[in-house]
Length: 274
Ligand SMILES: [Zn+2]
Image 1: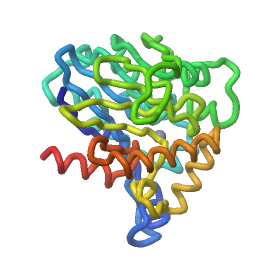
Image 2: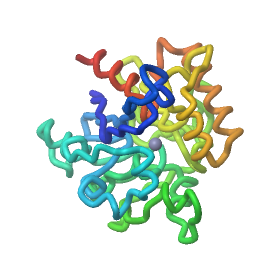
Image 3: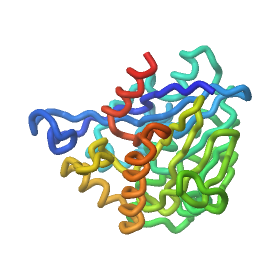
């Protein structure tokens, strides 16, 4: 198994230091959509999809206006997973499985570009995202237009094995696990991938800033605000974040934990591969 760390959606929100913890307050910040592309003996696997071609070409169809104003996505077609898969010499149809941390618009945007893939997601998340009577935040975060084509959903219940103390873990493919980390959304999960003798854990939006995994625990105020605004189960979210901190503290040598939107973490992984 080989893992590529991709950025499938740069965002440049205003707020500088309030977002990144560094530099001036007037600068624009940089956030990413950290996506894994796995090359396996049995085709390609994507962990999250970031923004897709449809989002970039017709953002008004899927990306709510206030989200665009707040996040300021760059909307560059070259950053989409499908273009990056092609740049590596593959076709979109080589992606057999997509494994999602959750269905927020900046994670499932690329689903339409891989219509033949099985889409693994927690049953709770699929139910929350596709219910017909969504309201408030849910209407913005879960745009129906990202899955009108009818993805090959494979919902997974949170019952199964234990992995480093995390319960209800499901193996969706060999060496690819769905790890329940509910809180940010109803069915938010991490995705663990075994590469050689180590694990990668894509923790999705369980936390937004690398400093939140440090023992002293630091997060710039704008990112704290965003996390609190988007959470649906606050106590569970914070409890899961605490368990991730313990995982990093106790098993940092075996498991490499990273989140979806932190540009520093993405750079760290790309440098390690280079
Ligand atoms: Zn997100």
